[in-house]
Image 1 (cartoon, helix red, strand yellow):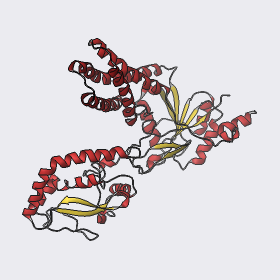
Image 2 (tube, helix red, strand yellow; image 1 turned 120 degrees about the vertical axis):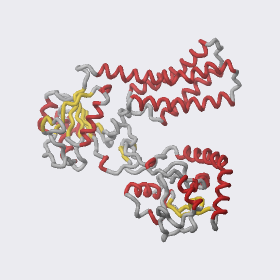
Image 3 (cartoon, helix red, strand yellow; image 1 turned 180 degrees about the vertical axis):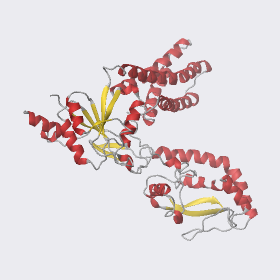
Image 4 (cartoon, helix red, strand yellow; image 1 turned 30 degrees about the vertical axis):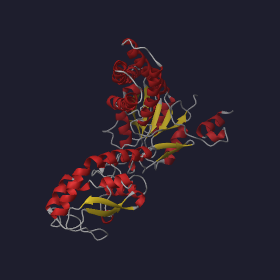
Length: 463
């Protein structure tokens, strides 16, 4: 194969194979190792607690240990413990590990106390095991980060990073790297030959970032071996420039990463996925893509329990509504539910009228239509207790964006309107909680560097 054919193969994989090019998700061998070490640690601590307390090891202990390993793997996956969320702080990682073990421990303790006939003496090592295991797992993962930060802090181990594009996205990337020394990155500077804009929207000023030069200087530094990794943070409209840049970098030994500026969109529960090697980033998505069944089960169990506990107080509230004003006890208002379906939201009546439809006067401060008892209900949110009927029936959820009345859908603020659109397009059930902010997250849940989705675009061949 000639040098030109080799260069074409690097830029265009189809030159060597008839298969279409694909993008593989990066998996860390270190995290895979620690997944196995976590399982061994769980079993080892259980064995140590049983042995040191003089309890004979039985088949029940074996089943308990294996069950804990399986359950911890399940809850750890749900908490994204082993994902390449390189932006986790130490506290964030500890919280995810503890949450995973807490779910494991709760499930195991219920099984032990209700199913397995353990004596009080046999329960002692189990309680010690439940208490010691999360501390040991968290300590091991923290030690991993501290060790990697120490090893990669050596000048010979640091990987020299160049940022192409003096943008806010590139500046955010640099701050993320500086906050994660265990990655072993050392930023040598920015490369950008565009003219700085007065408002810093197109390109940041030289005073804000360290600009080493333009793209020609980048190519020179890459050929001279002064750069190991290149992160491209140019706007997505600079496609031709990025393609040319990748072709030029193919003759060097650098690894090039493309970071698309997806944060220019109004992200709502965004996530990164891969369809047979084709990367796909959702802009609007449901937070319950894979666990809607668990959410529904939670609503039924908790909603039914709350309704049972609040049945008597609700009966007294209903009596108070009936005695203080004429009219029905309940007020059912039409609102948008999941998939744009119109649902009837139940509330205790707090006004002298029961208006519903397209011509409804919005309630105002000191509204004369509000009854004295209704004013108390509205201030304490007790008027929304009947929405538990909606939760149990499946038209609402305990936690979610607040459903808006049909009339107010087109006049609410842009952020709230985005939430209404999410409800109307089958993304999420409306919730009985008042706060709409619980449904909004700007940080996408992707396997990436500090929330920045990255694509490895080039593995260059040496000269």
